[in-house]
Length: 490
Image (cartoon, rainbow, N blue to C red):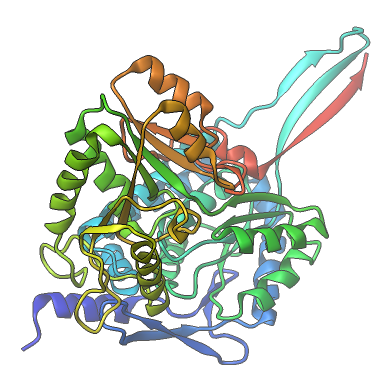
């Protein structure tokens, strides 16, 4: 007998768009290619979707170019209304969007529903920003001219999103692009294309004109996207993903001097001083570490705990981690889903084994989960040596590595001892120290006594090799705007 949940799963997958979305039309790939989308909780194939060729990619960019002039001239209020209607539709379809996300990515349904709401908020935020784009007028210092400052859309934009937040990373880019008056070609991750195709349907239903947003799913990202980057038509690239891929894309963008936004890798530290409220610190650690089962660039990757509270903190954290229910994200009560694929699960295992081999102690977990899916047990490691690989490589999994420290100076040096600088977290009840440490830490974001920093109204981005530019906040729309100065003789 088929359960109600199984019926919901089947209905959602069956209804999900599976073709390319180009110039307002749903179409097959030119060469008829398809790729499989898998359920990471079972390893089975969910469905197949169109797999774009380089020619499909060029069709999408041509559509964006053709739509650019009229869309840039559309009144800001009308662009805002498209985003607001999309915001409303995402909430109306929240259950189905969450189910689709869970099936293709693995995260628990409750967390997927939270991402739908979070993703929708980017549309509302940038709907409000669309009508606030402003320039300026001033007198030249010599008095013999006037300066008119105008903000204009950058133009056709290429957007590349990762698999771990398949909706939110899309709306965080599409929202400001639409608000600014830019058309776009978006390439979602091969592992999780269904959520973005469903979002294309939302935008179509919200009134986005043909060619404004084009979605190209492909298993050959380099072959499809590099010609678009080098085409001379695209004027902007926004990428979220790994630092090595980001560097390669930056080299390609240099050919035509494209505007770039890069949200790249992270190696976040989570620092707990001796005066911190340990219960709040544990709660923050659960958020910073276990959001998205640890598959997040903002996840706490290096956890530095003052030696005097190490034992108490590690025991409390291990108790919480050990109580988490692991399983298929659609099942009731599940709090930790599978890793996205076997490669990711095996990497987590490899990093844990390396740390244990170097002397780390397993407090809880430390092994892969049971079943056919790509599961790994929530894990706490204590006294992880600094030479362990996981201090320099993103774990991207449910593993909390703890290392003791003794002084503020020591821990700030440890936090900054990385090429990354996306986000760091600090727990202390000493306000002066909190501000001093936050100012001395080299990262684009700092969470003081909080384990989550992501917010559509705040500028998200990193320093050093964690990226360029900012997404969200009142600065996110500037990434899609050019500043034009018009001099007027008097």
